[in-house]
Image (tube, rainbow, N blue to C red; front, side, top):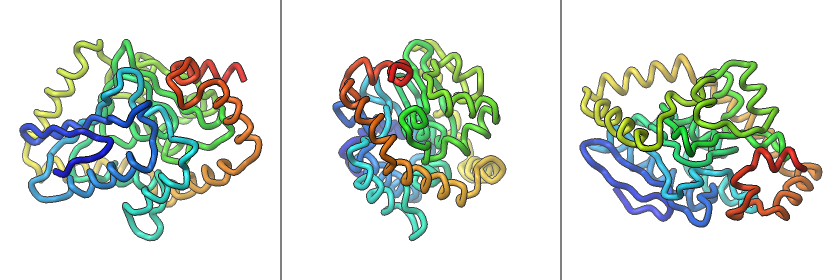
Length: 274
């Protein structure tokens, strides 16, 4: 596989370990999106990885959220991934869900907003009990979760829990995320990677045709229609231009948003203080 700018990779026994490394905070920008598109392109080739495990090089941040200064740029990068109607981050995440390899996220830091939506798009999610944080911060900032949270959370956790996570814009730790079904399992920090490594290797060793067919049929039963993803992406773009949301984002930026600050470390609390 090629070398990527924001993702380092290591392939062993059919398992590709893809480590997100986009300093200073692993924000979702056009560089990361372009690398994700390229990695998905590469994984479709015959002889490619059977399983992809995503983790982070940053101990604090997995994917904290999008770079709010780069929305047009990362949207344009996402549009290179699919057809004329697939021009959003949500469409790219849908492609991630339908990717040829099985995808697993090992969450050891913070994943909020579109970073949390990246997690939901993976086939499985495993979280550190000590360090994992998940949050849908969009409503609290005056935006809309446009990359899959509505569709995915209703299916993963149920209507009521989806309402609470999205409308409350609060942080979930690994234990709570496991309780409501957002992650498969939360494990002590020292056990997380060995557990994921064992599972990924086990799946990679099974007959590929059976794994791919099972994944395809599970997706057919469990994923939302593509049209719903497109609707949600449109709502995000509309609210991204709304003055009230811009004012809240401005206040958050003054408090250290997109910096290694208390605001980013405790985003749910920061939203409650606005």
